[in-house]
Image 1: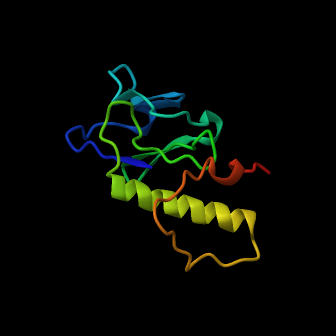
Image 2: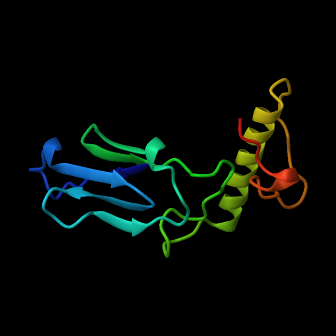
Image 3: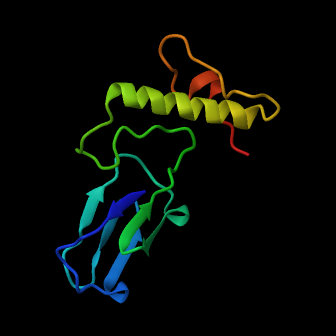
Length: 129
């Protein structure tokens, strides 16, 4: 999720906020230049993505197009995840995948030795149900 709170613009009403989620994210205020008009680094599933206003903040939730992908950054050309953070995210996604594929086992204490494999392609890739 992204959290946006533009305190400099206090006279904005909910009806003025417009947004659409495509492979390019665009969100802004009616009849103005978009706040976000960027190409995403990877594909998202627009039908499963959403935006909403809650507690005067704009929340945008993007659903990844492909299960098991680890995004290095949200928008093309923006700062990428620190390599150590990316590895931690890969560990988390791998453990989620193992848990989903083996529901009777507890992976909460599992650890990886060495480099964490790509969760999307490891051992034949992610299985879709």
